[in-house]
Each structure stands twice: as C-alpha cells, then as structure tokens.
Amino acid sequence: MKAVFEDAGLDYELPGKYRLHVDSEGIRYESANGKKSLNIKFAELASLFLLGYCNSNRNYTVTFRNAEGKAIGEINTDVRDVGHQYDNIRETKSILIAFAESRLGKAFPDNIDQLDLSLALSLKEKEIRLKAGSLVGAKHQVKLSDIRRVKCVGNGALNSLLVFTKEKGGFFDLPDMRVPVNELTLPVLEAVMAKNTGRGIDFSQGNGFDQKTSDYILERYMNSTFFMNEDGSVSDDWHRIAYEHIAAHQEDITLLE
Image (cartoon, rainbow, N blue to C red; front, side, top):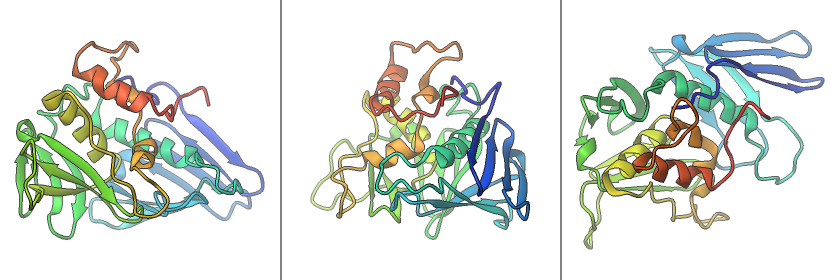
C-alpha cells in the first residue's frame, strides 16, 4: 500500500463552523466558537459509524466508537451548501481512508492472510473478524481462498457485501455470508476478488431509486492507493486489476487536495 497519510495530513476548514485535521494517527476537530474540541486517536478506536453517508449529498455524521462500542466522539462532516453536487465527500472519506490505512497496514494487500482484525458488526454475525485467512462470524465462516463472487447490494442507507463461494448461482442464489459495507470490508474483499478471480467486487446493482449501480459506494470508501506499492508503482498482476477498478472512478483522496 502507498499510504496517503503516512508522512502528512489534510486540513479542512469551513469558516464560521469548524476546522478538521486528518492524519495517520487520528483526527483533530475544533468548532469555530470553541465549544467543541476533539482529538481522536485511531489507536483508541474499534470502529466508525456513519449516518447519511451513502443516501445523501448534504452532510454526514461520523461517530467514533471504542472497543466496548461506546461513542467517544461525534462530528458533522462535509457541511457545505453544494446542492446535489456528487463529490461532497472529501472530509468524510479522508477520515475513512486514514483509519483504513492505520488498520490494514503498509503490507496490505499482501498481508490479508496474516491479518487478525475486526472488520464489522452485524445483528446476525455479531463481530465479523478477519482471522487466519478467513472471515469469521458468529454463524458463518468463509475462507478467503474459497470466495468466487462478491456483490454489493443495498438502498444507500443499509448496504451489504454478499459473499459467495460458487462461481455461479442457481435459482436460489443465497450468499455464504453477508458482510456490512465499510472502509475495511470493501478493500479486503476487493483484494480477495482480484486475487482469486481476476475481477473486482460486483457493483452493478443500484439502490432502487436514483443510482443505477453501486459505484457511488466504491467511490465513497476506496482509494486506488490501497493497491499501489509503497514507492507508488503498481505490480502487473492482481494488484493492478484492483487498482484500475478503483482508479477509473477518479475519486481518490490525495495530499494534493
């Protein structure tokens, strides 16, 4: 991985509202009136909870949760009057990319079989963990090497990645596991798909309303830099497949903002 936030950070300011700084260690937030100030370290976090991120273009709420699931801070991001401008996501996505980099490590994606990492929470699976080369939940377990299809589905508010171990589905095409969409599950499963099958996650299904595909989810959560080498090059193998799948959307967070 070529970590965007390894040596520097990004600063955002909405005059009269707040300042936000994002770097490899966490975020700093200060309201313009001085009434709210947060200094959140990624090392203290277990997960992020986002409200409105995939079903609106206005502004979003980011909640920072510790290992006990307790909220240790909450901020509003991308609070700008841009109407229906599509890419009103820069502040929020910067937090997601920086947090993902801190969890996945510079050796990603080549380290996915060695990672021991909490990926997501769901009602059915409770904690979903990446461990010993498998996705492990309370009810299901799937080896990464067995995965042959991953499809992104949802309505914008609730979105999932359907994980299949069969190349093709029958009449009842039921997934082997359902995984919530987030900043960790997407790059991990994109890497798995590129490595196993030579193609990425299937984002062809829309939200049943205004989006004909789920590409807007890819653009909100993933950076092509996840699949670069540390020197900025891209290996001519499955890494390039994943890299080009994401880079084609031209929505990377970079330090040239």
